[in-house]
Image (cartoon, rainbow, N blue to C red; front, side, top):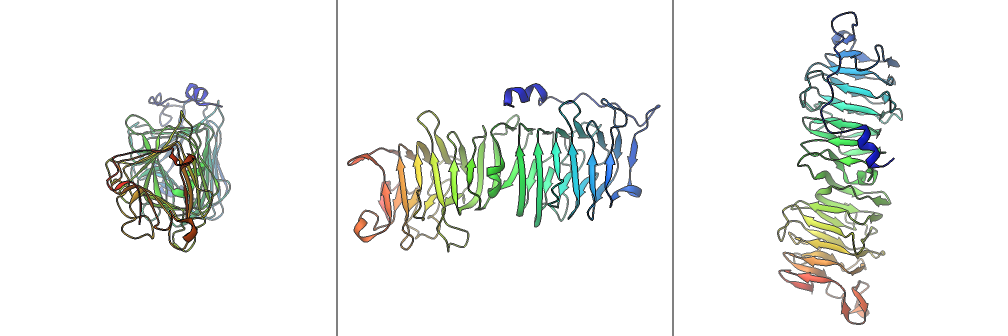
Length: 413
């Protein structure tokens, strides 16, 4: 399934109002304070069919113990208050699996952005799933004690969380679309899901960048990025081009092999950095493999795009680090991780005791507040150092393009 097909199923236009079953011959089920705790396996069924509301939620719902709430295909749920929502607590589960023709709708009949709280996952139950589901008008408030931000769907902080979100439409949130807290969130998000927001659609941890797929659509109106909290990237996989930027907030540690697809765009805040060290600085085993093409460059830049808008890429590992057909600009806000204050640049290669290696060619390196490329002082004398920097495609020919680097294009520290 490709994006073109996806947009024939979903669009970012407001939904047609759902039929109210609170009056007349069709009376939907009301869930209030008397039945808001689900402690045994429960099913919500498509009672009326079509667009008629089956359930009215007037309170926060808690799924607890080992209970699993299963929402059947075609169910329409209206959340009636700003406090109403669903929290899936430790060991419990929520399985909302619709079909292409009978999608599950979790909405508010009031049809105002941020009308109900949303869904919080604080469990790693393998049953946790949203598939062919529409989550609309959520994000009224954060689930205090479980998440730090307002979102339609939250992966609770400090919990082991596992959830799969596929073929779904998440829109009109009063905050983020999906927010992933610190801890060990395991998010599967792929197969043509669509998020439409005025605010960033996703706020995730660095280790979840691998989980996002290029077939889904991220953003709406003026949103052109997803937020990525700095931290360790522990997986070995490929980050895919999304059509929007990965906005990195803080230092991000590459602990294994990070492969970046052509066309990816990364933006960094003032303290943003990519480094091939782990968070403790005790291990330098990460590898960055960012190989673009002549027609599809990989871009690394600051959010502000001025010199010194982010730290840069710091390579301190002896692996097969390689940058090709990349555009690296506006770095040098501070020295590279665990390097002296003079080690400022868009790219910093080397460290006295790590034996760093890097191949950098066909790249555009510009607008650094330090060097374009800063190299450890012994790097130009291989006889005295295990650090190696290669930028040549033929003898004595530098294949990179440099401009407007404050301390020079290349220098040692």
